[in-house]
Image (cartoon, rainbow, N blue to C red; front, side, top):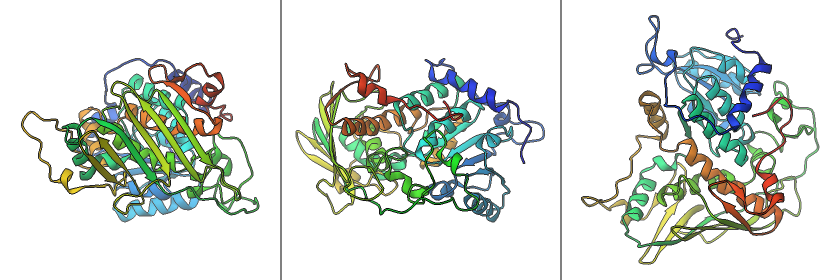
Length: 429
């Protein structure tokens, strides 16, 4: 059920620890498989993909050149293989993602597993010589995000994070409009989003046939199976998805960080308050308000659930400059903005942002060119950092001061302990 292993499982996990270190800055390189061989076209003509996590969002990445699908739920994997077959391809089915990474014929891996798996899947894929398209949010913890960025550098890998809003025409237009000073100096950006759900109580049960519940949990503490925890619903548990601020926030914040030219930095403080659920299984705050302070330049970012809707959109953000304002609705693939931004033409000598051909296509283009993708891992990590530290401030119930260079809270050991997690063996980064 797959190629012969080139490395034992014990060795595989042991080697991964090196990615958490500082990382060695190496040029992006292509594997011999990507460059081609006498009996196989080069990657410039054919990029072979593996897919880890193919239920829900992962199904949208399936393609004819998908050679392997992996999921801990047999139903998801079987359905994915059928979809690839309908496109004229043929994919082998696996339950252990390491079997996919052992395949020498696979050039890239699409990671669309639940959020708490993103760090392991991405770092291990980099070690195996694969480029990675990883769904948002990039990581669950700050430690994981930094390990992912280090792995990309050390192993010369391309990583695109799936905050696809940056590849929309609206986000591009809004970014150019603001970067060229049309609303003046941005003083604050306000985000709105509807509340987190509560979720009804249901008893624990045996997992359904074909679902490997232990592997679904992976690095998280073991708990009995409950359908309210699994698949889509994982988003509403702090242990797995951590609410709308990490789910949709990873889209909205991504566009803001790009527009504000903050892909390599972060805020200096965070202060969050929220309304905990009064009943139901989910533990994310129903309502939530978060305030981030940025310096050099100075501006404020706020996230509000529910906040004030603009242009009738369920979620989005509003930029407040000292001359004017600009609204950007949505933040993912359904991004929109005001007409004045969409009709704006950059003057000679003005700021022109990269215009993506599409988020997945940008990834494939960068696999071939070895250039940095639009939503590269450093940007993805910095975006996820906003989500992570916002939740930490909510959990601790106080304002926290953040050092975006050291990526540590200032003078707060209790908060710093929440920047990493104790992973369940053997699921380590």
